[in-house]
Length: 374
Image 1: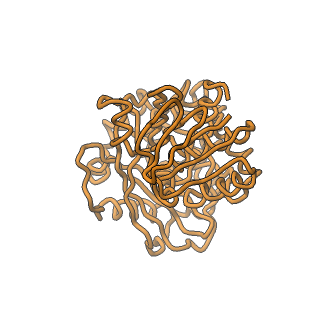
Image 2 (image 1 turned 90 degrees about the vertical axis):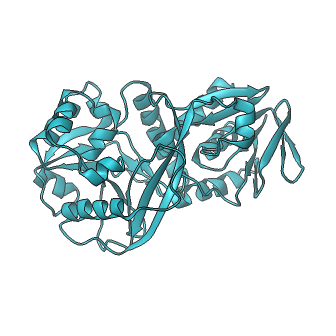
């Protein structure tokens, strides 16, 4: 079987991975020389803790298993089972964490409510003031800027994989066949359009103008090396407001009794923070949903994140060396993990995982492969 994968972000690359792993040939086509979108502009978190119960959590847990297996084969992914801590400062925040720990799926997530001293034993870099912390043992991380490149090198070594960068697919010309902007036709037994937030052009032509997927813009930053290990990922209690696992009466009380910081509320913010292999910290993020998106980055969210991080670390943040914006595609119905649609004979569009893309992509691709009988 021959599979044509359009798009070299993490969703497309994981489809290529599963196809090659099952003995098939793959041609992967990317309009940039290498992927440059949301798959590289994220935290690299394999984020279990906040996922909605049911299908979303099951997908994330399966993906977590796959990431660990693939990471064992491809050290360049930088997979590490670091877990995450959410430091808590107020009774309202602790109450939300207590409700999370009482969930029937808490054990599957690895939830545990820790004292401040227990949290610092796990992550000594957290020297700031907090009273407790929510631990999620199943959270993990990879290196987002290099993961696709490492996977590609492993795929190339299989002898059943070809990569074509700098080519934009313009047309479906038959069953499981596409033409790129060089005029070349690529024919296979299946075509996967994993085009991320690129939802215009050919995608609009094939899927129609009412595609139930929206685009979301975010801002993030990365620092110079911290100078010491940050042994876990770190979130703040604003993540409770953002992730569906924390919904309930305790969260309602938090929202009523402890309003979000005005800057964080305006930019729909939470703190997520991961240390990169070079020691720097990836920190974010904001969420912008209304089109047209701004073309500039705004300083106030960065100042807010700096204050929050410095309060947790109990020390000044290292110099910020990168700031960026990114855009991802998210299902309009956010309860859906992904939008998977057959748009022509032999051609499937797979998009819209939103902020779950890095976490869930191995399981999303596995499900595609199973459904198509690869």
